Image (cartoon, rainbow, N blue to C red; front, side, top):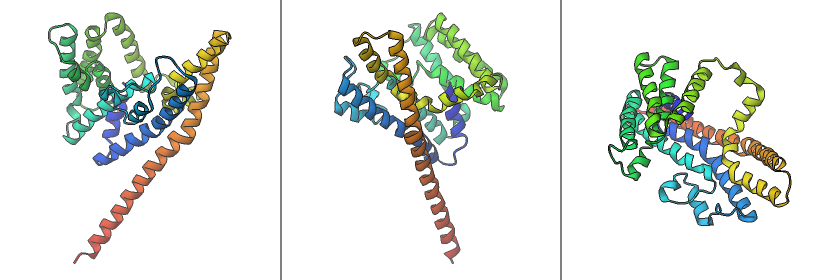
Length: 290
């Protein structure tokens, strides 16, 4: 839902296609590449049965869409990044075709096919099911609808109907128990967007929000390594878990401060500077023309 909201927001603010590409590359890849290197080295050195990957597989992971190549993840959580990247691709297609305004309607049709597949009325081949991210499309669609509702875009009634459809579809695609959990997420997301959850501005929450991407990238396998080592020494399990938690927070903070944020600024500043130089060159050419 967050991605659906943010990506729709981003695409409505960019002036040209390359702006979006630079925005996403600068946001995702520097920290991701750093996380791959750190996680691969730690797992290779200390070992983590069933989760080690070869150096070749680690190199292919840098693409972020390695899941489509059936290459194992350096860290298990990376599967979501392939899903994210696929969503970015489809939203970029809508942007290029000037179809952002109808994205949620097209997604609703696809969600309908996902429902039919889930209740065994039709059979969608796995590659197609994957490339159209049919299992996760309800949540991306909800994010788009929330953006439109908050910003008063299109018919309020239409947005709410699509939003409710995306939520109800999870009964078939997942289960009724999942639906109840997702319903809570939808409510919380709306309350946060509408400013009814002021406690989220509490400084520690803001801090964790700032390092959340880096923390997400490095917490799983490295956390397992630390916990396993403490378990092997027969230390108190709670101490092992807390130590893993603290270590990953420290690592994420360092990654955020020295990799994620600096490279994001550098890439975007360089890109904006190049656009500025192109604009100056264009103006000079105009004034020099007879």
